[in-house]
Image (cartoon, rainbow, N blue to C red; front, top):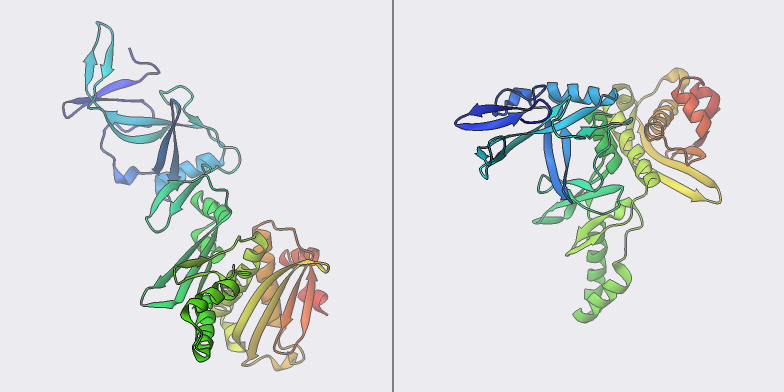
Length: 371
């Protein structure tokens, strides 16, 4: 007798065991029914632990909604193998057993093999997807961000930097945020490598000075190869990574700047009115408090003549909207105000954290907080 209503099934001369609830009646994995992907497994003593990715397939969406609503689900293995009789009433599985899949079930045959979600479904600690090898790997590192640096070896001066917040990766993985929102949250920047620009300028000076090559490298290491102070200094040059610890506030400041650029590209009215030249987001923490400073440089192409005294209001309003959406999306509270600086005319506007939230909720008008 096998426990928990488990029964045997014959298939191609072999027998398999399965539970009679959510396992299919075939050992074949039907792609139309796929709901999840087992991305990693490891042993912890006698217990087998693993990480499962819930897919955005029809059945995967069903699983996701069940988890979100606090439904307890079990996990059960599906496999094929022959049985070896060891006594009149007992048999053991032979060495030819083949593990086919792990299925989500309502009542697993293995005692205690349940997943019990509380609120958001947690992702296993220490699991990260390697974007280069496209596989999941285990790490004991305690980190909040990961950064990808890419360049063409033929033109190493041009690099692409991609920075992602690990919690954002988890949330899109669990369907808590959309893939479109996730794309807006990551920082993607293609630029000239700052270290390459610095070293080439210094090298030209060394050559004019006829400095001995062995001293050139020494001076470069001592004075010109330092750790990055900002996200814009991150990169890879001449066999060395230039990276830094990334904080959430500076990541949000950079994200605000990036999203402003995206919004101005997508908003036809603003695109027709302004030619955006640059946006810079900075987070300050010091004697003046904690605040975000957004510096915007844009030329006016056209504007409403009836409001010619405040031609930049539409742009400032959009900047504040983006800033409020970003800080709200991360439930970020560690700031006193947001300052928007219009570099075209030197004007600035400061909006408190409370007013920024009221503006987002349409509880206060833009004109009330900038006049």
